[in-house]
Image 1: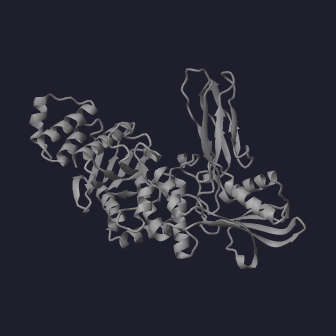
Image 2: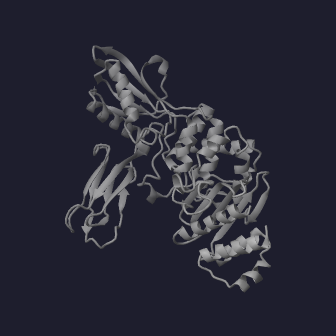
Image 3: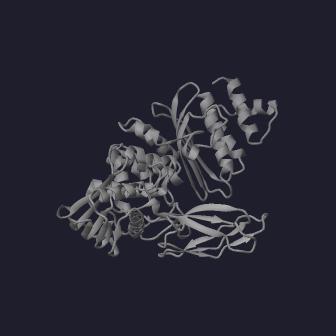
Length: 492
């Protein structure tokens, strides 16, 4: 690049983060900053989080690493783990793979009464919620109920079993922290799941200070979960202080938040025993549409021989090529862990565990001729702080996966800066808006961003930027990450 371009870029980036130099200073220092790596190293040195660990890698369309700042250093990567999971799922299950949730009966229909038991067989489908059905979380339930009604079933004299035998009974991956388990981003995992195994709590401070706020929750204030409302409404000028704790292993939730008067908040809260939650909600929904159940509701882990049963209803999901968009664009931990176990279940034809799923992900990386000694998984979604790899490994993967037959689906699953997903509010006022596809990552002390950038000269580069060991807001890191991307966009 020209000296003028380099100096102008240098001035732009530094003034953007509040560090000012005279023209003489810039000219003198530019003699030392004779390449991009030195520039980026200098930016990191002058950053307010310069005591943190930074790692940057950029590769060109030939796979050559053209920028390397600590790019071989093992880093905690947070949700950048999802990049590898999505590639493995697209490769292992195939873009066209769909999940089929089936309802079987063991009995017979007498007039409008089904006499016998009902089995809803979980397929590992993560998408039985509103995300793919125009925000209608009951879409799948209604489809199944309508099929039962079409068969003439208006009552069922038998038990209803929620079968989750496809997965093991370990609800959480290793490495998740207990105080996260009440919240939507750390739900239980089960082969038969509804609404990402959460209820959606709404709290309204719609009464006078000193009184209890009102609460309601979806679905239909279900008694499957119990909320102990010990919250307090304060004056209008106090800060919202959230305290929500679900007692481990139960569906009892203590609410002890303090809210300013007039304030309202919505928060998805996790439940325990997903299969029971599924069939409990299903039965309540069916009753509202005219089907009455008389028996018990039971979670079921027995592998059923469905050839001896009567198929009553089925639902087929959208293809995996669409489902992985939720995984990467929205960084959905539930979808990620469900897909990882499903990969194991369908590839190995066995009861799936997180560990066997992650082993298949490692096998997939080996098939891409990547050095799996350079990566370590503890969970799939990146909540576990022990997930480690380097920025250089990530950009190598991004280069290699872009050569695979499913690369178009992989690329479409990434968020687009300024447009959608976790990047919808990033780079909005930049010339590079819409020209960056990426995956964000964030856990305590970790911020990452990796993906592809199409530069001003229409060259495509893979990039990865990871910052570890910081205290405080991630916003200053985001700003520098974005400024680095603007530099790459303008200069390469």
